[in-house]
Length: 127
Length: 127
DNA sequence: TGTCATTCAATGACACGTCATATATGTTGT
DNA sequence: ACAACATATATGACGTGTCATTGAATGACA
Image (cartoon, rainbow over all chains, first blue to last red; front, side, top):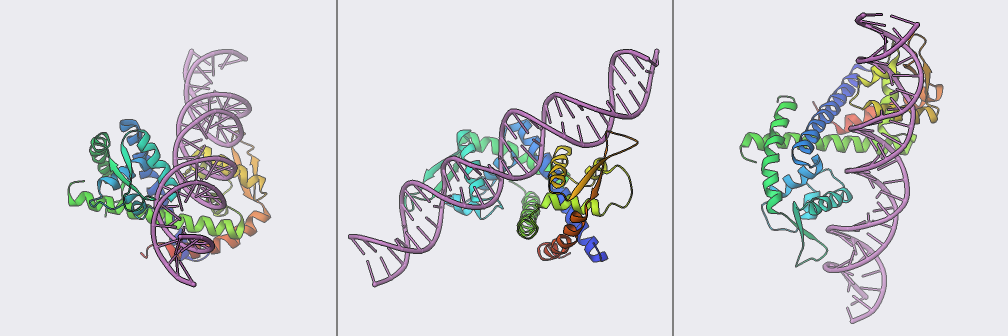
């Protein structure tokens, strides 16, 4: 802990951590309370809802999130069991999985997304 | 997922998440590999090393980090068992604990901090 | 075609964080 | 001094993430 630059660097990092934890916590609690899903669950729903094409997505979604492949697999598993998402095996590559929102998933996502955006607006530092 | 403002908001949030996970991951791996401690362990060491006064600190440290009280307690416990920190009970309020780096803790922190700052410099978005 | 390496997803062992509590101490009001 | 409440830390049960590995399918190439 020497130079002022270092102090500033560390302060910057702490502020990132703080807004990350603070915001993630708020999201987590609200989504859990109102919709019975966690933040990671929502994020997968959000990614899938946001996916336009018909590619085999499980893998590609992994590239759009810092989540581990293993974590993804487990979250998707929970979502599947909750009836919010469906996994369909790909015709052209049977190792891959194709994800799709169920009607319930789509409906829940629509509501939850509103809440999610609102909380981001409240919690994220302006600009 | 309607307005462009919303898209931008979500993109902003995802970028925070990404830099958070990416940076935290890099720190975690490096500290673990070179010093045998996790990121949270380091962060406590760092806070204690950075504490000037003689207040009963366990509680007050909690205010400088997004960590839960429970998490703090467990991290400190690990650090204690690793011989890097010592907990001394406060004279004037025996519920409180006073934290102090051991010599080993101080030495390790000195090295680890250098690594830590360097990695922050590499990973954090400039400005 | 048969081997060997590669890729996608799932799983088990394990570590760590969270929540709800427990325990000990302190404080306040009567 | 005695309840009743408040505060500081510790702990146990539990969920979820990570790493390493597995299983299945594919690719590459002699």
